[in-house]
Structures are given as structure tokens and as C-alpha cells.
Length: 221
Length: 217
Image (tube, rainbow over all chains, first blue to last red; front, side, top):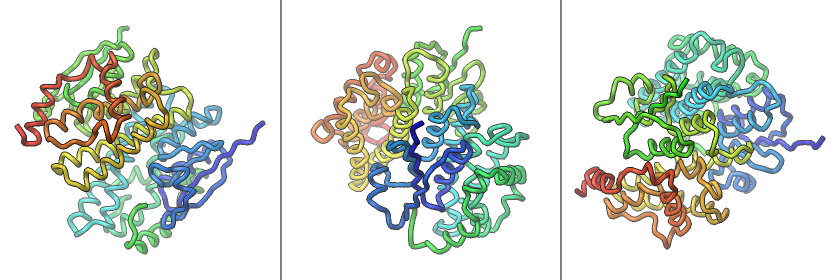
């Protein structure tokens, strides 16, 4: 059997990279991890992601796949023989999963940055309100399910859970408690953290906090 | 049981037209419900409570929104002419380009017209367009999808038709044949596809709309 080459190029704090890590670990796919210092990008990164020059990038048998949700879908489709399946087989449920993943992807990260990087108190407060609006919508969508994917982690779980590492940062800067506002969502996050794939893939919340506090000179790369 | 397919739409929207192209490609009949965005219907608000926007596809009573999610749904449900490749890597490549067009290209272009032709905005939009130009040049195909249109071409519909009309309305030219010969050629091929031609909104209506919108009426 030909040995597959699977490499994840990532930066440790990236919630987008964590999505890919979780997906690889959930499927039990062996991979090599390459850390890319996003404050000192190498020419290697611009070779594998010439359009965006960003992490994460998955290298699979010398082919490069970019954009985290794209990578997660690719992993799901390229390794169909491995469970769990992240996206449902039913087209309607699949479209709903894609809708919510897209919703989180478009809105949450940008809103959250306002909490700690917003210019002035108004922007910071707006950031907090937006984050809570998004999280409450997701909590509503979760409902009584254990995971967004049902009994197992699915596409939406993988998309959202990496941000759990940032809850402490958002709460500390924004002076609020996400658990008070969205108890079921935090319960979901804790359930996810009991999975090895998630626990192995998420950076420590305190490390994230220190990192965010220390880099106010730098912006997103 | 016969399929019931409804589309909540605004005929002039390029995002709505993405869905119409996909439906047309698959030969699906549907009921079109034209929305007045200044007075959204109760149905639209019910079917898309998160964004309250068009397009929304309602298939046997179940709503699907966000144009690219809808287009992939259409491809998943109805076989026939494929919108996405079968191979997982080729699919990932198509989705990458669709996302690039949607997240980077189109917003950069909107900024040009929204800022009334600000030099910085034009420069940034041209950077994104050059990336697309290079991609078309490197592959040397008629369409992003090869010989036939695929998800990427459908996502880029705004570039093929609406852009030129806004350029005329505002007298701000972004895509010239000199600067972007491949995009120009691709656009011409795209709008002449039967499945696209049939659903494009009338040029005069769009021109009048954009003239009014950008204060040049």
C-alpha cells in the first residue's frame, strides 16, 4: 500500500487550523505537522498558498488544499472509508450544515476581534453583542442534540468548537460570562472537549489570552 | 410525488441568478416569487430568519439559503449536468475559487463603486481581478470549469454581466479588454451560454437601476 503524504501547515493559535486538526484526528489520519510562524512567513507558505499566503494548508500527496472549511470537506470526501462522516448524506441536512458553518465562518471571528481590538468602548460593546447574538443563534440551532452533528461531531461542531479556546479571552476583555448567557452551548463545548480529537487540537485558553494581549502591535496575518 | 420548487428572488440580483443558472442547467421547473426588498414577504422572513435575504430556495417546503449553499444543494439533489467535479481534490479547487470570488473579488469591486472610484479601491480590485485573469490564462480553458461552466463560473456571474453595466452607469472602468483579456473573453462566453442567457435580467433595467443607485440618473 502506498504511504500517503499528509501534512498540515498551521500556526498554533489559529482556530481555523484547529478545525483541520480535529478533522484529521477524528478520522484517525496520520499526518505531519509543520508550524509556520505567521509573523515571519516563509517562502514555503507562499508556494503552497500563493493566493492568500495564509494557514492552514493541507498537503495531500503533493496537492495543496487551502481554506479551513474547504479542507475539512476535502478530508471528509477524500477519506470516505473513515468514520465519522462530518457532513450528512442527506442533501437537505448537508445544506443546513453548510449554511451554519458558513454563518460562523463569516461572522464570529470578525465580531470577536472587536471585543479586544475595537477602537473605543462602543465598538468593543458592539463586538460583544454580536458575538452573543451569534452564539445564541447557534445554541438555538443545537437544541436538545448532543452535537450539531447528532450523536457525533459533525461539520458544524468542527467549525465552531475551536473558538471555545477564545471564550476566556472574550469574557475577560468583555467582562461577561458566556456560560451565563449560553449555558447549553458551553455544555456542548465541554462535551466536545471530552473527545480526544478536540482536546488534542485546541490550544490552552490561557495561552491564547496571553498571546492576544501581547501582540497588539500585530494584526491578523 | 411531484417536486415542489419555489424560489424567492429579486430578478436583478446576481446572487439570485446563480441559483437560476443552476436550476436551468438541471432543467428544474420552479415557481418564482419576486420580492420587494423594501417590503419583505412574511414567507421570506419565515424561510430565512437569519439573513432575511434572497435567494431562498424552498424544496418541498424546506428552505435553503445563501446562494452557494443553494447551488451545491441543487447539484446534490438533481443529477444530470454536474455543477461540481466528482474528484474530491478538483471539488476543493472549485470551492476555493468560488470562495475567492465571493469573499475577495466581489467585495473589492463593490468598494470601487461604493467609493466612487477611489484609487486605492481600484488598485485592490485590480489585484484580485489579476489573480482570476492569471488563473484563466494558466488553464487556457473556455470556462473556469473547462469546456463547460461549473460552480466557479456560476459564482462569477456578476463579473460577466453586472460589472460591465455598473461600469457604464458610473463611467468607472475596471475590466478592459487590454488589461484583462482572458476575463473579457470568459465573460463573453459565459453570457452566451444558453442556460445563462435565458435567465439574465434585461440590461436596460439594470442600467437604469445602477444609474439611479450611483446618482448618475
